[in-house]
Structures are given as C-alpha cells and as structure tokens.
Amino acid sequence: MSDLDQRLHALEADLQARGSVLIAYSGGADSAFLLAAATRALTSDDVVAATGYSDSLPISERDPAAEFARSLGVRLVTPRTHEIEREGYRANGTDRCFFCKAELLDTLVPIARDLGLAHVATGTNADDAIEGINGLRPGIRAAAERGAITPLKDAGLTKAQIREASRRWGLPTWDKPAAACLSSRIAYGLEVTPHRLARVERAEQDVRSVLASHGHDTARVDLRVRDHGAKATVELSATLLPLDPHHADEVLKTVTDAGFTAAEIDPRGFRSGSMNEQAFR
Image 1 (cartoon, one colour):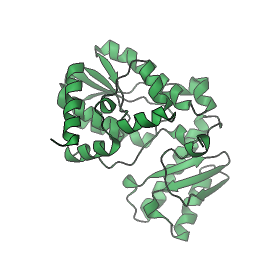
Image 2 (cartoon, one colour):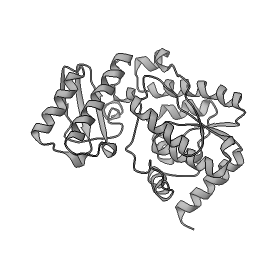
Image 3 (cartoon, one colour):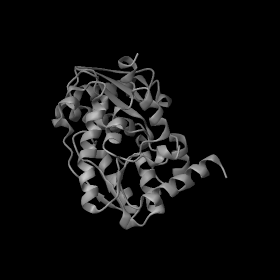
Image 4 (cartoon, helix red, strand yellow):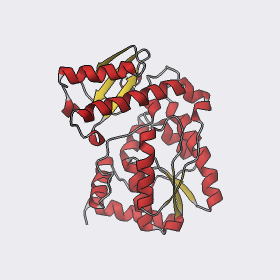
C-alpha cells in the first residue's frame, strides 16, 4: 500500500469514527476534498457543508462551491459571518486570520449543534500545520481553541497528496489554483474595509477578463491584486510572464480603473502568502 493510500485509509477511518461532521467549506481544493472524503466515509445525512458568506469571500467563488456540494448530494448552509465587525480583523495585523477564523467557528459551532452534528472540521492540511508552527497560520490556533477537528492534517495529508487524491477521484478541484480570502490581498497595517475588499475583487475580476480576451484559461491562472494603499501590485502565474507590453498595459489600466492610483506587475509572479515576506522577515 502506498503512502498516499495509507493516509487516505487513515482519513476514512477517522471520519467514520467521528460519526457526523459539519465541514467548514470554502470551495477550495482542501475543503472540497475533505467534503468528498466525508461523503465517502459517512452517509449524506451525517455530512453538511457550511460556507460563510461575507465581503471577504469573492462572489465568483460562491456558485462553483455550491454546485460542487450539490454534485455530492450534500446539504449546504451559507450563514453570514461578520468578521469585519471584529476590531482585530479590521486592524489587519499579522494575526488577522485569527479573528477571521474565530468569527467563522463561533458561527459554525452553534449551527453544528443545532443540526445534531458531532464535530466541525476544517480543511487544514499537513503543510498548513508546519506553517502554523512558524507563526504564519494564526487561524489554525483560533479553530483549535474552538474545538474544530482537522482530519486532513491528522491523516498527514499534504497539499500535493490532496491534489493527487482529488485527481484520482475525478474531483474538478484537483488543480484549482490556490484561493484565499480577499483580505489577504491587503498589506498588513492597512485597515480592512468593505471598500478595499470590493476594490480588490473588482480589479481581479477585470484582470481575468483581460487575460481571457487574449486566450488564457483564467480558471487555471494564479492571480492576486495586492493592495498597498493607493498603489496595487499584480501577481500572475509565472508561466504568463513577461506579458506582451500591450497586454500588460491593458492589465494595469483595468487595475487603476478599479480605483487604484497606480499599479505594476510583479516580475516575480504569483507567490502564495507574499504579504508575509516583509512581515515575517
């Protein structure tokens, strides 16, 4: 039995032992895989997906996430979360994710109880746990303090293994680009506001439209518009760089049209968590 097969067997056994679970489901590769694994290990009555709707969740992510849950025959609940009302979240320090995850779990735990589900589970994986040790994942601590379980991490499944298992199972999320909440685009220390979140979302949507008009499969393109105040930086999949100068001009214009005073394309390309580079140097 391969290492991956052993870990998948451990995951299945863990979920079966839990009995019932509410999955904190964003629609990303990890939580989608966990949701699929739960439906394999348990009955559909014992699994519910929960996606917190707020200004931090891109609107473009909502319908695909809901469709995936429906394809599994899983009930989806979409409570409104209010992390923007938490001072620590708005302040946007390096611990911002703590307050976001705290809000999510404080919302989901009562829902799980009301639905008669034994646990709330997050899609934290083994790689996330390592980053958490280094102080880069304060949300993991918030979830743990609220009793959330982490079946993927406990089974030792890495991001690469989750993608490989998702591919084996025919899940459409197996090669979905990394996703993160919109607030992760805002430089630490700048206040998180609905205006900033909407501006970033609008800029990213418009950049994707520009790329699509030039024949790029934007569903598989890594893209972030980083908010540094008046200025934005655009991070794209390295395979797209350097852009044709005309295309680059179109991209930058669409970002400034979204409300930024200035914009530039980062020549280093997309880097997950690049806002941490300066904060944790």
